[in-house]
Length: 582
Ligand SMILES: CCCCCCCCCCCCC/C=C/[C@@H](O)[C@H](COP(=O)(O)O)NC(=O)CCCCC
Ligand SMILES: Nc1ncnc2c1ncn2[C@@H]1O[C@H](COP(=O)(O)OP(=O)(O)O)[C@@H](O)[C@H]1O
Ligand SMILES: [Ca+2]
Image (cartoon, rainbow, N blue to C red; front, side):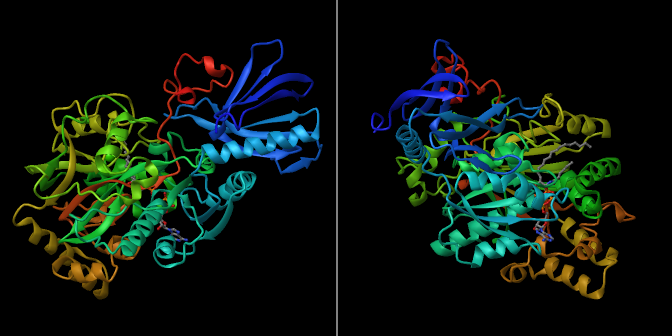
């Protein structure tokens, strides 16, 4: 197969003659009499077009019948982010004859198909026009759509008109013919796609999402994220940069990154899924406070972070956790989950032992949460500044190494971070370390555990306090108080079965609820709220379970400058063993 695709000839680029070689895996061209070779992995070719083609500022084709243009991924400096920015490289070649030109374009296109089988042809795209700085529509139409067109990808685009429209569409509408789903927005939009796709997949498989012991079916459609939100944590932690072009190129070439997902349950009913943060205390309070300042855009989190820090709160709670196998990895082993991560690769074999390749992952059915083999739960009780669970590092521009720098994207575990009550300066030190490379776990009041599941509940007596706080301090209408009463006392299961989760609370209801009202209460509240990937949960007592590699993104993990570099100049002689030459 490799030899079938081989093609070698002289080609001209401008007025210079090159020796061009297609080996199947790589397309190289070397200036004759010079050693300078440019080498592009075929899997990173974006498109091959007849003629002399430009795409910026608009697509234009000068149809010289002996010419062709190759567009490919070009890495550039990362501007301070943890990953590499991808740009579009373009080279226009001239052939001695039209026959040779047609041979080159045909062979290159065949090689591309063969070496990147997951490239999408048809995508369903949801744009949140109100996410982040409200630039989603512009980003998609001016930056992403021209690249998709170049790559021959057709899109059905839906600009959302309400929250949860994308989720509902994925749950109910016909998805035949789509290879993947893309969101243009932030973590909240990603979360809609996550819920829609996971829910749809389980419905079709006849599985009950409410049961935390059930092994859920991995989703067959890939998710792409074009970052246009406030935190953009899922994009940052899986790509390493917040850059719409980089993300669009990962989608185009059909990259595939599995991702762990945490299911959050209350009284045996599924409340939500999370990938980045299930956080009680500080992060819950910041979110509740930030809801009142949405008009500030992404800055609302910085403002609210400062306000909540100044309010100096801690909360009583009981945390139970199910430790993961300490022999596999540790949250303090100082490693980072990068593109091609060996811990995640080994986890694929462990999580899906019957699949010989990733193509058959989806037929695997393996229980990681079996009561006989789950191990011993550990219980701790006390006052916490925050309790956080994350399935991945949760790095983001605010915190370039993230909540848990050594967490893995796809190892089937999450990291539980317990920050015990401490003096304000100690907690500030902890928070500040998130913004640098200093170890935030190397503090006497911080613990981190790699886990498969956790439970959280309030100490005896506190549940009643919480309920009293809701009813007494609510400034909402009778109807809103009724809602809170129903959810807090006994109606949770029924409410959830009807599809009511935290997301369905209006802002008015959130502010009416002192659980959620952040700083507006005269008395410091004795309970906080859970922040679940940017959504407030209407329950305090929860059980979380990590589902290994439940979804796949169009991404490949973080390529950092030491693991990968743009070595197109160095051909196969790269001594740094970068990802291009593995
Ligand atoms: C006072 C200095 C504080 C510095 C602390 C920095 C720590 C930052 C860690 C951020 C972890 C982010 C985890 C991701 C959460 C998102 O899902 C969620 C929703 O995002 P979006 O949909 O884009 O609005 N974002 C947050 O909950 C923001 C947390 C910010 C906390 C300061
Ligand atoms: N058209 C819309 N109107 C109002 N809310 C929307 C709309 N589309 C999506 N949403 C909701 O907006 C929330 C925030 O969106 P997101 O794209 O994550 O932006 P940000 O990162 O700024 O929070 C999401 O939870 C999503 O459900
Ligand atoms: Ca993980």
